[in-house]
Each structure stands twice: as structure tokens, then as C-alpha cells.
Length: 305
Image 1 (cartoon, helix red, strand yellow):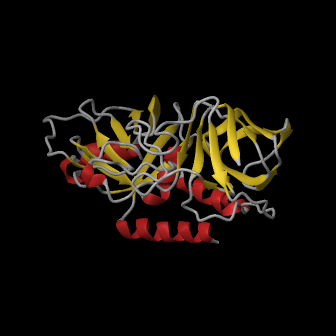
Image 2 (cartoon, helix red, strand yellow):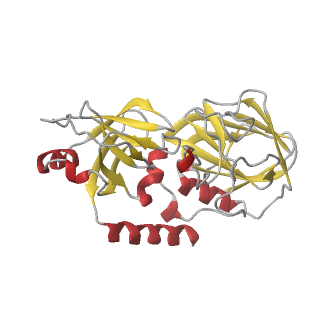
């Protein structure tokens, strides 16, 4: 089967769970920004949760299918139609030859994930199908999807209907509380700076992408500039720039950085970073490592159910 992209959308790319074990070579993880939605979409089409999907950002594609198969869409809500008839997120959808799927108006969230029953007819790069958009590495011809592309799959199947349980039917409000643990440089910040960071609400700026997310709030004040040796960054690292404003590292972000990190977002909350848009409001709260680990186990257990 092939998926023909009549319109590619703003930023549509192939992503899986990412490429791991190469950060020491300067290659970031990449992969789906919202791994919860990626996993749920794959489970709806009876595939391993880390399988490759289409990550669709803000303005979605129009896709024509050249044979019958099953698909599923999770994550951000769009006005979705199949042959001009409404279809829904979070359930298995059967498509027939020459059916056209259209992502119309975005309703909430930033990224949707389209899983398909077949397997990609592409080669993995460094053990992953993920597209690193900045480095032009992996995915479909080392780039995002463009108008007129054909994405080939094999082993397509028609599957029985399944639906995501209501407790996993997420709504993206645009107002989020993100839980954090202490980071490597947290102790370099004064109690007053730490209190200011955790007590205020930040606005997401228009400078956000798969590399990082810049925030705007009351800047933290420094009597003396914090000087640190550049060191490793992971998704969810919150650096404080010389302007006193935070920037959150994301999946395609640089692997090292020289700005001090005041906190790290816990793994359970990282998928929300894939759904925020410019103008959204973020607040942070601090938890301990034990809570972060138990929260992750509970979240994964719920997804596995």
C-alpha cells in the first residue's frame, strides 16, 4: 500500500520511539514528542507501541490510500473527515482503496499521531525510523513529508474495531502544571530564585519546535552570572538563559548545553510538551525522585492496560 499526500500539512514526519545510545556522538533522541499518543495509536492497530507513526503538527495533511487497511489517530484533535464524512480520534478506522483522509481545522493540542496497520518500506537509520528535522536524518528521505510524496507500506491488514478507554482520552486545555525533579545545577540558584520560578505562571512564546520551547515570565535576577561547564541535556531539561527566562529542551534538542538547569520535567509529563502551542500557560511544581518513578510506573501500567 502507499499513502499519497495530496497535501502534506505544516510539519508531517515519521517518528517512532527515537534513537537511543548515540547522544555521546552528538545525536539527540528524536522520536515522537507525545509518546503516550504514539503508543495508543499503535495499540489500536495491533502493533508494538514503539512502532513508527506519522507525527502531524498544527496543520494536518490530506492523504489518499491506494488499498484497504486500518489506521488510528491519537493526540491533538482535528476536524477529521474520511471521504468528507466525520471520523474520530482514539479508535480503529478502516479505510478502503482511494479513500481520502483530511485533517481540517485543529481543535486542541498541537500534534496528532497516525498509526497504520502495515510496516514501513524504509530503512532504519541508527536503529530508528525517526526524522531529525534539523539534522536532516532518518524518516522519509531524511526530511519531513511534502506535497505529492508516496509513503510505501507492506503487510497492511483490516482489523477489528478498538477504542481507547475514556480515562486515556486526554483533553489539552492550554493551561498545564508540569511536575519537576531537581536538576544538576539546581543548588546554584538562590532560594528566592527557586521560589520565583515555581510560584509564577509562564507563557509559551512563538519560539517553540522539536528542539526546544522558550517561555516568558518575570525574569529571574542574578547578582552574579552563573558560569558552568557545558554538559549533557535531555528532553525536559529546563535551562535558565542569561535573560532570566527558561527554555525547555526537547526531543531534537542539542545534546549539551551551557546554561544552568533549574529543574527537569518528570518523564510522566514529557508527552504534554508535544501538545503545547504558543500562548499556552505553564506552571511548575517540584516532586522528589521516588514520586517521579512511581508516577511513571503507574502511567505505563495504565497505557499497558
